[in-house]
Length: 317
Ligand SMILES: Nc1ncnc2c1ncn2[C@@H]1O[C@H](COP(=O)(O)OP(=O)(O)O)[C@@H](O)[C@H]1O
Ligand SMILES: Cc1ncc(C[n+]2csc(CCOP(=O)(O)OP(=O)(O)O)c2C)c(N)n1
Ligand SMILES: [Mg+2]
Image 1 (cartoon, protein in one colour):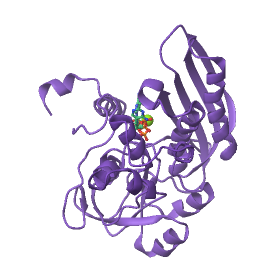
Image 2 (image 1 turned 135 degrees about the vertical axis):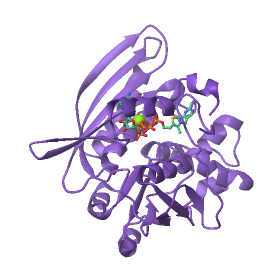
Image 3 (image 1 turned 120 degrees about the vertical axis):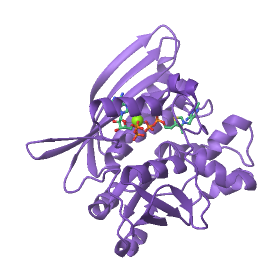
Image 4 (image 1 turned 30 degrees about the vertical axis):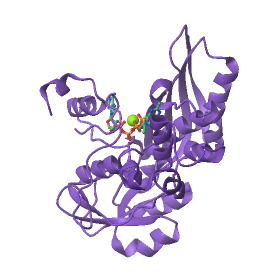
């Protein structure tokens, strides 16, 4: 890392500093136990200049914002129960737009049976739309931490990867080999999370888990680093539209490095669970070995590149 990079305000540098200052182990959500009740709680922010593509309707953006926060709680193995939401909107925004965004949060609450318990509202003269969304839930049994992967485990994911890569490609290049449809945007808003009941049944056997918010490659690296293991990838479940919309020679790089916000659950589990994993609709993408780093089976390295707040996509650490 260059000398100047140290002085730049970047999400990864800040997170390294704050977690080491406070002795926090990097995980997707926080865990708190009180009188034998296990509470899993998370906050994630949405800010329109960072998270809102101009072609995404506000209701879908509201869904994506709430889903991003909920995903961290569910992936740890808790049943999400409630939401608090603090929203700061500019007075330049119409009340209809505000309601549209908030309706997206309500959509997520309905889908996952969460109660919106309250929040906070601020109106500023100008500027961006911002929402800080807290989701909490209760866990029974095991917490699926980011660490704990063991050599010999299978590596698996929920859903498909690459829908968000299409949107980022379109945002950047202003064209893709397909039209951006309402259905694609709807699917992006809901993410690629598994069904809660299925995940909660499986998680008792899961060794380590993370959700894909910052891109497939970077999420795999975070999982590998947290457990001190090597990950070998032999198959990526590409979203069929990624194959259709992104130029063939760019697909793999876009899906690995310019993805994220899809919230696929990425986890490791003992090899004897393979048939259960498949039956529940997850895809085995590789395995865990002793060592460090993330590689394809042929030995080609998957780089530690993805979304880093303050740097954007594709900046190596
Ligand atoms: N401002 C902060 N104060 C304390 N801990 C933080 C802060 N920002 C991030 N963290 C912690 O750093 C870790 C990684 O955060 P993050 O990358 O945002 O996770 P995720 O992608 O799952 O939302 C988490 O354990 C989170 O709680
Ligand atoms: C205008 C715009 N640029 C880029 C993106 C892509 N993008 C923004 S944030 C992000 C990663 C997720 O970030 P965050 O919500 O901070 O999630 P966390 O890692 O904290 O869960 C991605 C892939 C976008 N959605 N909109
Ligand atoms: Mg976060």
